[in-house]
Image 1 (cartoon, rainbow, N blue to C red):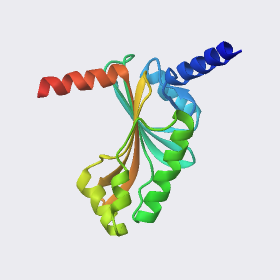
Image 2 (image 1 turned 30 degrees about the vertical axis):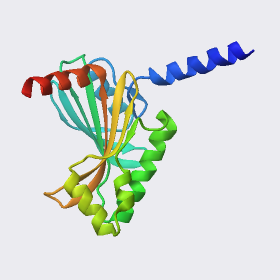
Image 3 (image 1 turned 135 degrees about the vertical axis):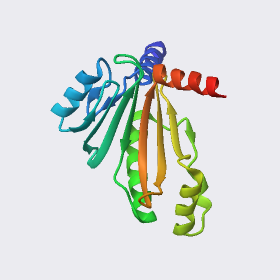
Length: 186
């Protein structure tokens, strides 16, 4: 009996570790055009579509969001970013961030790494927003899911003086290519 329970637990752990990237229930796999078509069938609207990237908009987890999908080659690795609605106050930004983070934790488990604790020590809401402006998107959580990586961060857009949560999925092909490119640059 103990052996059976152990096998079931290992199987479930392996399954959750190897799940594919999905956005709005659509598996991010195959040609970019096929992915875009499936997302459109699930309520998204395409704003820009090129050979290796597209920008869509639609509701994701109840939030009207922007969605970008980029690829190295048409059927290789993918990076998917979801730009959630902007917030002008700390209380709204914190609420949206925590709501989305809770959904991610429920789906993927606890983050591999958290960089959002530094906000706990800030005294005022303005101080917290200032930290986000200065840290340039490094405040958030990271999950290593084996087949892909998840980055969920608080971002600041200086041109509009807006703050927003940004969720990025990068599959291993894209992640390794970016790492290789960075190594070549350095």
